[in-house]
Image (cartoon, rainbow, N blue to C red; front, side, top):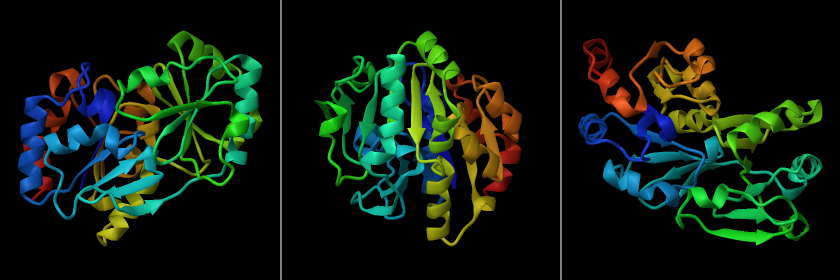
Length: 269
């Protein structure tokens, strides 16, 4: 199984899959290698990428919401799901209010932009691919389960917010910087590796059957646990330090370059 982060890993800086990466992944997939996209987004927001790679066979799945939801691509049925209730986000809301930060909270279908806080830049990232509702935190549904929360702001402001993280905040959330302008807050034990573990188990496999590609802190778990964890040339030093190999950058077809290596090809035999 090959598991791939999207932004700054499989996707170019223009947010597209290059023809070179597409051709190599389609070829491996046609030979029975499982290709799994791993993202913080819901599946509908990346459906065009799933179609581009033709990941629509009966055994094709996607890891969404940074591991909280594993989806069967063909019918969008849920293989594994883990969410938390509204009360879990109270500490984060109060923190954002104190420091003057924005906040978006996601269930498993859409985003709720919290309007009693600073205006968020998160909606601008999706160009209409994802539904957003705007409401104060108090109006969020107590009966829903939520997958994650996001603080999206200018990178220099996220740097500043990060210096103000309290021990209570770090204890209650798994915090990852998925992009320079996006900080994600997950349940304490949630990670992409959780969803991948469920998917591997579904196939009767374990992490010795897994190769992963990533660049940012939300990829650390899957890079560390995989038999072969590959960091992009543009990856953070933190990711490179735990990887088994480093390939070219996301704008230089780094995924395809590593998969075409002779020693990599031997692993698939």
